[in-house]
Amino acid sequence: MRLFIIPSLAILATVTSALPAAAPTTAKSTLENLQTAYNGESNAHATYLAYSEKAKSEGHQKVASLFAAAARSEEIHAANHAKVIRSMGAEPKAEVKKPQVASSKENLQAALKGESYERDTMYPDFLARARKDGNGDAIQTLNLARTAEIEHAKLYKQALAELESWKGATASFYVCPVCGWTSMTMPAERCPSSFTPKSRFLTVA
Image (tube, rainbow, N blue to C red; front, side, top):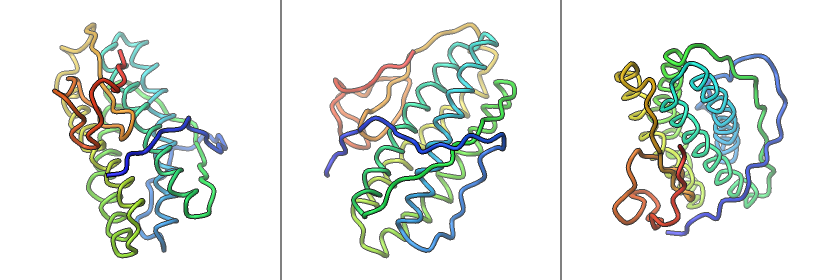
């Protein structure tokens, strides 16, 4: 498997006051799908950073760390998608909208809904098209992102279920720098998704 070298995330951003719209799954090409995914991950990155700050202000430091880790993961996904978009001769574009921030509980619910959509609908649809097109690089970046979103959904679901016991607590989260896979525990040796050595993992606290 060819692993991505993650560049810094550079986003062509237009800030507005609306919530990010759900990404459509009827795009006409793999390139269009990648642009949609790039836009979605770029917005998720901005939104999760805002959610993290809100969680801090409410005394939910562990939730704040989770959102910060997920934001770093989404940044990695966006960078991976951008690399493939550029390899296809296009420039990645994102319209980053101003996040609408509510309570930490409501933010977790919104995040879980978004991750579940990407896990169950968006990425499977985009992967089906990439496979039809025989685009190996697109298949890789989309699959790595979906695998990480599965973990994000699990973490958000756990955080919602344990929100009261998490309040006042602190924790570190571990993020694979290659694929964005995220966990509360460091893998034994390598990332289970991209096989990146654990020595390269990022720690977010």
